[in-house]
Length: 157
Length: 188
Image (tube, rainbow over all chains, first blue to last red; front, top):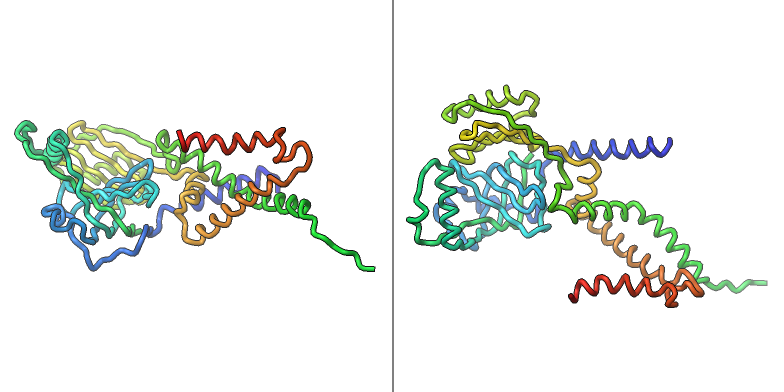
């Protein structure tokens, strides 16, 4: 077998393996703890109650960081709502092809304080999502946004 | 008459350096190629090729999900089976497919964008090894490889005798430069 044939065989084998990568259950980090499952809508309705507690959320993956694979967005059980799962770069790498699949994630909810300018921008964006209108000038109080820092994630097939 | 055999350390080192060097060729290529690919992760996606195709979509957002899906599949007939759907906002609807592809409908712009995802052959596998996405067995294997690289680096210092030895300035300056470059970056 000449070298070209051998290389073609290698590339073909790798391509075949890459095709199979698209369909399989994936696990990242520790095992998911389903005993502490909370709906995302419940979580986001009163996030302060869940801060720094171990929780598990589940839902459809509706967004993935396309470059570093360092975050995924999970759709809430409520309309127009989602929760971001964020890891430090390289800690877990979420492949882009998991979009649309169901995931379970265990971790801790963390708050990110926004300043007034960021709050106005965020609330305007949320209102736009829901088809509502707000006056950004009427916002005087800052807010926090929430994301899950995971210890374990399971992406179902 | 018995011959007193002594170990020729110089020869043994050269033999080991050669054979371990051969052993490391494949892994070095994997790590070097994926290293370049991952270094430039800000400029491109080293794992996937994402192809986008945009079409105009005039269906009303008041339609049911089933009606929207049907219309979208008519618009993009060669899509894999539907995996899930999601309302991102009142004006944005997403339909996900089995292979991670998705259609995003923007009702205000009246457009539908189909994103088709393909894994990059070779790079995807090399990068996943480099980032240790594989199972624990790979961790052991890559630790062994790192150990072998350390051996290759150190044994290289004892490969040549004479004026081109690593211990003479004629070639020794190369070692100084190799150590100085990372030191400058660390302490600068």
